[in-house]
View 1 (cartoon, rainbow, N blue to C red):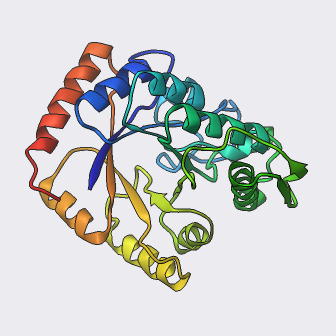
View 2 (tube, rainbow, N blue to C red; view 1 turned 60 degrees about the horizontal axis):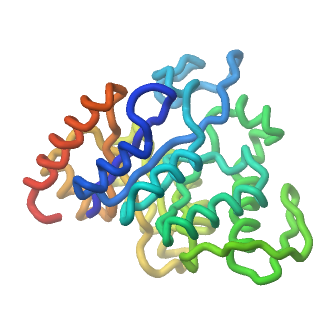
Length: 284
């Protein structure tokens, strides 16, 4: 089991590059950041944790661009994985996003993972021209199209929402396969989508009892003939040895801890305390 950090970026507090470098120095394996291009003031979409249009944190309205943030982090680190929890690929042009991700993987020597979401904020998706009832289909096509651009010498793709003729696109990622993780509620529908299109699951902040859900994911994954088990990234709030042992046995591969919305000095002190607690855990 690996331990990582997720920073809910904003235009205040610690900068992503400082946080990523500090996390790497303290032995963390991964560094994740979120994405929202904007938050429409008038919304019909309910936030998953509040159940209505209210937001649990004003950082939703202040989120930094994830790929710029990760590029800054890549420049000051050497080993830590660079990922998103979660990005919203369908809010971008897939050709230019594929270029951005491939460039970051090239310049970071193969450290990029794409953590993607379907998008709970359907009002935000609508502003980008994405029909809410087609968001899973659009994401599938985006991923397929980007994989073509990442791997094929002369890439092309034809879909209902993405189409382009034979094209050259470099750089290619250092990794032969950019891992794709999906952050969404652990439902049968989500797991079936992951088994067809992705490499693993990121839990949502409201899901704490995930052991039963993981049995469902493994069953669907195996029935889809995927072979090796999926990567499972669980969001946690406080290290608990008993829970982490249970999670490891259930198939959790990574655990992420969120950084507080505090000053740089306070965040670094938190990282010190967290790394000490994790170092004291028995081997998982």
